[in-house]
Length: 137
Image (tube, rainbow, N blue to C red; front, side):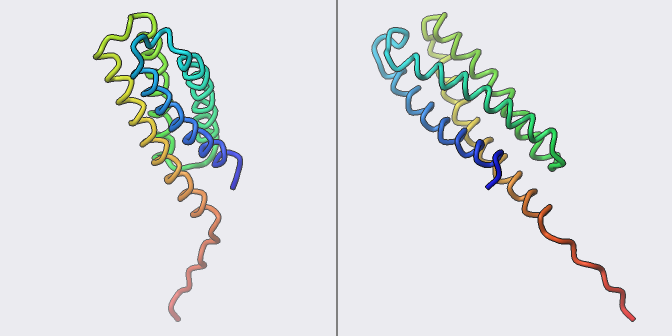
């Protein structure tokens, strides 16, 4: 397993932890006063840095355009996710922002899984030696 694949797996596990922490924060009576909020924010900002690194590594490699599209979209959604999270903290937790924040989290998880599958397939195809073409005689 190469470094990018390992970081992608760590990011996916971290995102699942984020989703669990996020639902725990949302379930409290006063989310902005919850002790779980600080780890949720710290892991979220670290996740943003990780997604940015993964996106940069995909764009630097000779991967498929599909992988670039998926990771680029994941990065944009992660930026939106951070903005929605800070909107929740500063705005007092409006229900519409909360629902968008939860929905985008699940969408990011789906995109990270799809991006991992697309890039793994591209790596496998690149590692296979090409079959020489034989002409009929």
